[in-house]
Each structure stands twice: as structure tokens, then as C-alpha cells.
Amino acid sequence: MSDLPQFVMTDRDYAILRGIAMARPSGERGYFDLLRHKLVQADIVDSERIDPGVVTMNSQVRYRVGDGRWLEHRLVLGAAREVIGQTVSLRSLYGLALLGMRDEQEFTYDAEQGPIIVSAVLYQPEADAEIVDYGRARMWRGQ
Image (tube, rainbow, N blue to C red; front, side, top):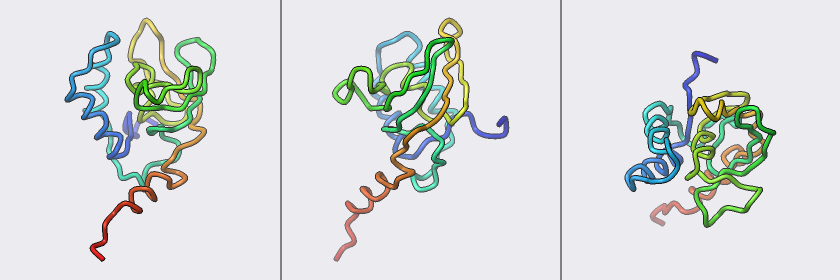
């Protein structure tokens, strides 16, 4: 897997990260550094071309942090969409770390926490064409 980019994300997800970066987030220690790393290192692709094994916004993912237990959460944008025990926010270090990772990928962003490991992407909206169809349905054809 060494020839693959470290992170892959849709142009939509990349735009969300850029918006967060422009707002200069404050929060958990290391969040802005990880955000900057993701923006620089990511390989950006169209929503139609994203591999179904990549974590995107609203994906359901099985992961763990360090030696902790396996968790299953849906990746959401922020606190307004969070459901305790069912979601993880992109505005948290864990959520940010997950975005753009693949099935069976490991990434260490904080040596104290240990690596974050993605076991599997259980659901991805782009794989079911929800995001793509929604975007197309809103396009004006001039007729």
C-alpha cells in the first residue's frame, strides 16, 4: 500500500476541510496541525470516482484508537448532527483523522494516543450514489 496516497477524499470533503481551515479552528491540541496535514497530503477525486473503501463524510466506519476497543460511528460535520454513541464529529481529532482513510489503514497522528486503525468502511454515501444523485438533481439544465 506504500504506492497509494496517504489520504483520498472527494472534492466536496476537501472543500469542507478548507472551510474549517479558513475559520481557524480552535479546539483539541493538534487539531489545526492535523487539518493542515490532511489538506496538503490528500489526493482529491470526484465523488463518482472515490473508492467505496475510503471514509467520506457520513460514512459508517469501524475503527479503533491505539489498543482501545473497536468502535462503529458515522462521520458527521459537527455537534448539531452528533448522536452520542453513534457518530463522531469531523471537528474532533478522531473524526478528522478518519476522513480520507481506507479499509485496513493505520495512521498515527499523536504518539501518546497510538495509531487510529480503520477496520472497514461499512457504509459510504458515494458508493450508493446518494451524494452524486442529490447533486445532479439540483443542477439546472437551462430548460
